[in-house]
Length: 295
Image 1 (cartoon, rainbow, N blue to C red):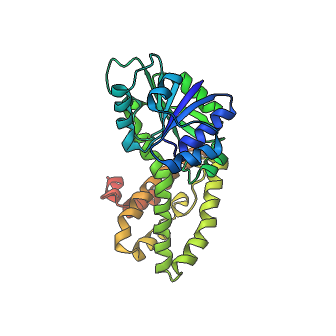
Image 2: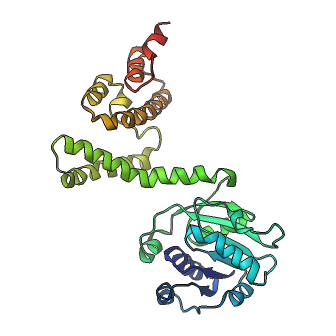
Image 3: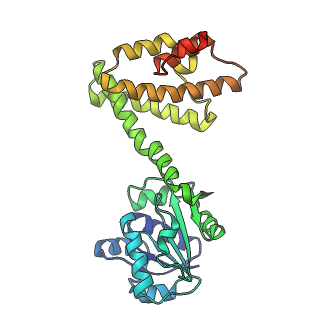
């Protein structure tokens, strides 16, 4: 594959390096930033080329700009550059569908989206963790997309273009909201008298242990704690001392934990005692749970 890169940021640079290592040819790069190009050039001896030359030389075009610029680049290509029929345009956004690249219905191109499900802090970090990274793929030529991902050392997952926002939301929950959960836990620790810095340091090994459990036994088996055990008295104690601004959050997360707990017990042929389950539901905000069971 002869490919071009538009946008020489962290992702574009790392993808180009790994694709060249896999035997593909990078025919050029186009970026508005001199610093980005100099960094790119430190990894690959590839010329900066005008869009017209780059498009004509490439089989596939990777548009690895910021999300807000992807549509603009596609419009520029479709209006100001001779189109190469059969060419594949590829972006790496996790939230935008591949067809955002098709600014005209009659464009003789294929559109793909290959999203690495990973947070890349630098080119070096990206190169270190691309192998084994999972990718969400959607678009016109998923077979090509899966081949590219495998050449990158990644693991491809076809996704529904119409539900891509949910895919991205799932990634946000797993990554960004993990930081949010850590912040909430630190807030509770500080309420208990542990300074914030010490609170985070003490929580990180616990969080790492939970991630290890997820890797080893998966869902729902990795769930532990009072809700998994059915210990309603402990949950009640939490709520009695909980800062008011965190009660709803705790209850919402607790309801999901309770569903996981039920699934975990069911897989073992077990179930919560009805009174304990009902009390947990009531504590976690399901109004009238106790009365419904009696009826």
